[in-house]
Length: 193
Image 1 (cartoon, one colour):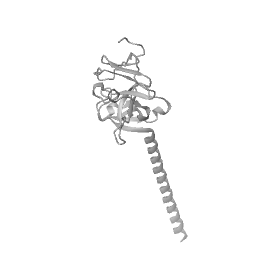
Image 2 (cartoon, rainbow, N blue to C red):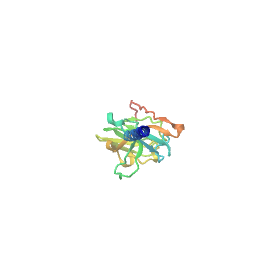
Image 3 (cartoon, one colour):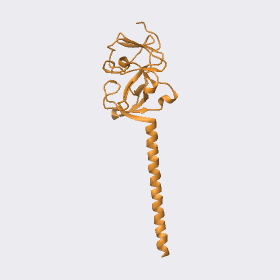
Image 4 (cartoon, helix red, strand yellow):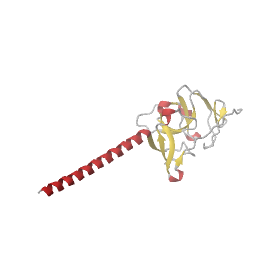
């Protein structure tokens, strides 16, 4: 009789340890999942406005923490909520062209920032619209790389930093395009119009 009781308590103890281990593993997995979702987001490109850099159907990882320690930089590819968007509206993806205090101008098929023409090899072609914009203290000017086929700041004006969700840092689909995004460099000398 004693042997049966000991055997039952050992079996019950093993099941208890197994259930505790299972519960700890599930809780740890949920914690990791929530942490990753709090710090990053996964987004699908749904439009052609960022071609040739991004194509419809590609998947990206966006860092939601990028701008906690530093401000957005010219050339960053960002995901953001459109100005005057409804809560359920799909976020947009564009490239930061203008920073707070900048003067942006579209002329002669090019984009000029503070009277300096930007060298933009990532665009689909020359800009087909004229315009001039002065940015305020917390305003960013965003444009699609497919400049003539993009609803962006040239249409509806600059966005504030509060609209930014994060910086696109990595493309994970399709596998042929797998990898991080290079950060473009821009000309620093003035060019005569």
